[in-house]
Amino acid sequence: MKKEADQILLLGFETHSVKKIQAGLAAGAEVNGLIGGKTPLTWLVEMYLRSPEFSDCVRCLIEAGARCPDAGLLPVLLDDAEMLGAELHRNPSLIHHRVDIRCAFTPLRGAALLHVAAEFGLVRAAAALLAAGSDVEAKAAVDEDGFNGHTPLFHTVNQRGNHCQPVLRLLLKHGAKADVRLTGITWGKSFEWETTVFDATPTSYAQAGLLPQFGRDERDVYENIKLLAQASGRTLPKEMNVPNKYLRS
Figure (cartoon, helix red, strand yellow):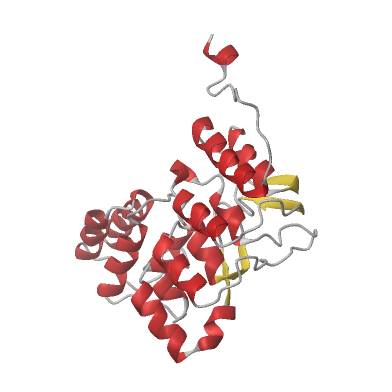
């Protein structure tokens, strides 16, 4: 019975369905129990869907009694600017807080809270962090191969469904550099779709969204490239050929 309840819960996480999450909990899934060695909240955060319903799903678990051991991370996941402001007032050092989260796309290792807000498209949390003085150029951890060390902007440029574009625009408005260059960035690190993008800039990382394993819409890709080009003062061709005429024929 519990196994079936856990499966309903996981399906709710996979589809960002509050109703399915509630159904799984009602069927006997334990809100702080372990599923495959991980708590339900961890499963939700590690899932690959990105949508406006993410924070509602987090809130559903918290209201059901889920525990989040990281008091600074929780208001970001909830996209709750008021709660986040109160936490920052109580503990100003949270502005420098770092987290390690297994992430299906852009790595969240040694990541600032602004990286987290950028990854999940949490624009209210991102705005509150920036207003409190978060470094728009904060760098995530560099891995054993010398890759990553990326800024929050990288999390926004080729996200699923272009869900993170509002945060992309917000970061650029606050002066995020669109021409940062990394040795490389490992997208989907530790997942079966892991892909290293070498000599990565926000623009090249956005364009990597055209690779089949990324599965991004080309219109979204080039819309973001245009925003990055404008921010860095670059000139783009008048005809971007999107969607590609040859492929359409």
